[in-house]
Length: 204
Image (tube, rainbow, N blue to C red; front, side, top):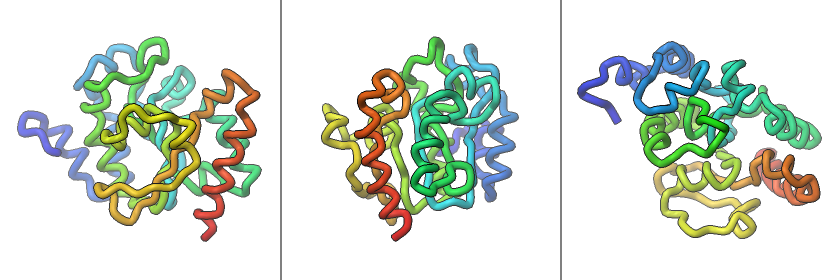
């Protein structure tokens, strides 16, 4: 969605190639929401934009904000380890992004307005990458990517493939956010089982 009053934002969204989009967004100094006041830098992604799998988390954390890369903190390292055991290299086989591109204060979840301001950038990322599979990492990603999902239970949603009319040809799966496992390692067996189902689809 273009903005008649923001030509710099429009230029980013009109980028024809992913590299152009990424460079433009990273250097934009976006001030469209209050998260601009708490960030060190805009975190666009991590991984391979030519991959056919996109993973979407909720927001950058402290490590991501400092390094300018998505999912490089403890949760990201756990995700890398879990998927590496299945032969999946997150940097080679996927592109990892977030609902919002700037770190919220105290690592809180992004609020609806913040997510709304970042939504055009996320949508353009998906349009340029054209993924075959999208993995939604946690309830926040599911809530913002599929607004019709209300009052859902992660226990019921996680590990299941589904489609969405706004994204034809794309298969979605919800996974527990790795930070959820870090808070309670007894949940790790559940987190491990769902990526196995994803791997079957990915290899198929």
